[in-house]
Structures are given as structure tokens and as C-alpha cells.
Length: 299
Image (cartoon, rainbow, N blue to C red):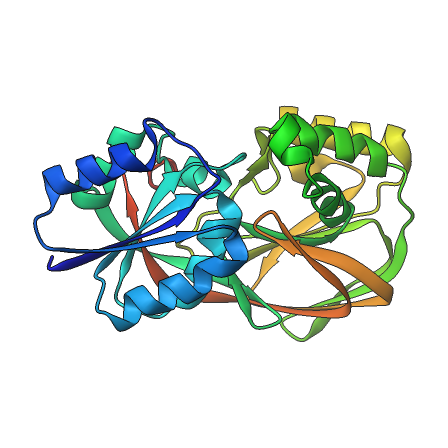
């Protein structure tokens, strides 16, 4: 490996910090190191493009799911491998791939772990690695992004979730691989590439990031009581057994809303849309994973 790169969100912390990261990289690598620090995740794509243009074969991404998603969107389809340094709030992708929030171990996985070509989702032209959604979850995430995550950490999602549990439903139609699957009032639509979506909740019990399928879920829950029952079922049993959830899988999905609805991907709010076009992109990117990755254990 001649050239490696680091794309680091300056406001995120892990272990001994970025100075410690430099020392660890020097212990493992004596070739060229490209170093990019960004003040927010929106600036990460430019850094990832620069790293790719300069021939980086391995890109370490220091940050949360939002920073990783922004880099993944650029690196999809390339030969570069991505090593996650989970310095964010939720670190959902790292959790699902078995990458620990331990700087030394995460760096070792980057250099010596398995290289796995995994799937990505693509929503309205942008790639995601964990999940995307519209409605309740997107409103919750958008609300948490307004400074709460920095002050409250993971609790921000639970707080904003309680605030939005009474959100209204919207008339929704969902087509899977060209066939109508759902039509009616929905409070949330989810698309998953992995199983765990936050707070230990298994939204998609059978999801694997290398199976060539996109998990699809729609919730009709409305009001705090129905959402409490739904989240309780997702936390303690199979999600598809909830009376307020329908779950299946597809390769291409088209969602239409009667009114513009907030949507998100990998924990980052993206605004509002009245139509979502989503598909799975098989074997789209290479991740560095531990030898005993959780998704592989159950495969």
C-alpha cells in the first residue's frame, strides 16, 4: 500500500485524538499519507475526491455516520478501501460491521482486517450505507441535528423521538420492483442496508450488507401509544410482528407522498421531497472489517 488518506471531522473525538491517530498510522505505514481535516460533514466529499484523485488505496474516515456517508457517496465504485474510525454519536455503520469505538483497534482493522465488498443503497442519486427514511425518523433526526446531539449525545434522538411521536400521517404509495405494495396513510418509511438502526433497535432482523437486497419498511403508527408499542416490539422481538409495521425487501423502490415529507440518510437530514427513488447497489464499496464481523457470523 503506497498511499493512504485520512478524512477527519475536526469536531469529533475518539481515543487520544488526531495526534494519536497520526502516531498510530506512522507505526503501521511508511508510505505517503494524505491528511484532510474538515469542519463539518458537508465538506468531506471534496476531501474524499482529492484523496481518490491522488491515488489513495485506503481511506480512514474519522467521524460519525454522516461523515462516513458523505465519503462513501464519493468512493462508491472505486477500488479504494474505507476504514471507519467511529468518532461520532451513534456510529451505526461501525456497530453493524463490528468496528469498535477504540482507536487502536479501529486502526488495526484498517490495516490488517478483512476487505469486504459490500452493498450500498442509493436514494435520489445519493449513496447510503446504513439506512434512509422519511417521516417520523427523519423529523426526529432533523430536530436532533439542531445542536442537541452535541449537548445530549445519543439521548438527543430519544428526546426528539418523544416530541415527534404525535406527528401526523401522510397519504403514501410504495412500489417495489414495479409493483404496488402499499397504499394508505403512513407515518414513516424506512430503507435499510443493515439491521440495527439506533438505540439497539433491530428494525430489519434479517438484513445483511452483502446480500444484494434493500430492506423496506412502512409504519402506520400514529400517536405516542402506538409508537411506544412499535418501538417496544422492535427492541424486544421481531419488527415484522408489530401490527403497525410492514416489512419486506426489494431491489428498486419508488415512494410517493401526498405532501412534501422530510427524509434522511445515515442520520443526516436532507430536506423535503414528495417522491423518493431508492435502489440497492450490490458490491458497491470495499470496507475494512474485523475477522468476526457480526453480519458474517449469522450468514
